Amino acid sequence: RGLFYEYNSNESTDPNHVLFHALGAWRIAPGFHDLLWHRAFTVPAAQLLGGSVRFWHDQLFCKPAHHGGVVAWHQDYSYWTRTQPLAHLTCWIGLDDSNRENGCMQYIARSHHWPDLPITGLAGDMTAINAVLNEEQRREFQHPVAVELKKGEASFHHPRLVHGSFANHSDHSRRATVINVMKDGVRSASNEPLLQGIPAIPAGEKVEGRFFPLLYAPAARS
Picture 1 (cartoon, one colour):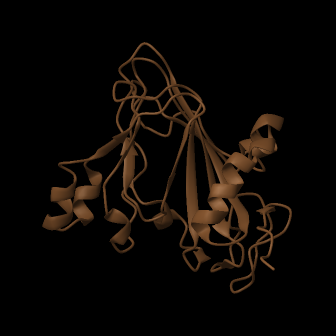
Picture 2: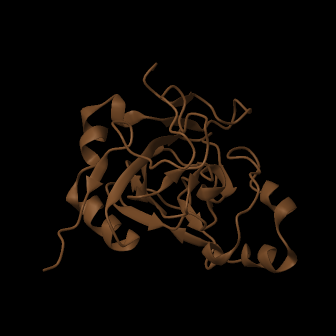
Picture 3: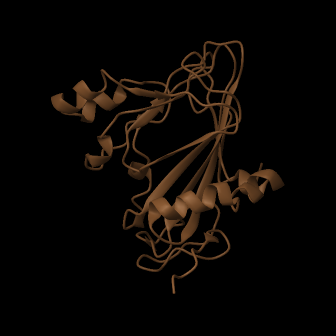
């Protein structure tokens, strides 16, 4: 447990709505470590980023059956402004089948064109984001796009795309791992450690090193 950057047995404050959330599984289990270099992930990631893929961090999410909590609407980059410029990508991979009943991922179409939004919390209140939206943006939440996936399937999304997932009311758990990456060349924008428990990278310097390995570099075209 000490190797996790963050470890929350329940990110929610409500014991009746549990959201397990942890960062750093790649340092714990060989399967999560090796997944980072899998070509089924790295090749499309390089295509979407338009260049070499550098690891940012991973996440684990678990919503237990019957009382699994929500992941509130948010933009990933709201939490990542300590790295610049914005050249990031998220890959969500199901460890269980995910559907509307057990709280699959849902996206707000076209919200990746919105500016950075203030952080309004990751767990507990799906409506918290309303406080930082204008009327036009709020209307977009009338038509969320649910992404139902089979175990082992994945979805990619832009770091500004607003997304979240509702509670798990099913008889089965809903587990997922998330791989967050950046285009090689992104720099630190903070003199504080970018992740808990690792050395700081001074502001302005390139994000690299053993905690942020290069996962894939496309072959140069001749």
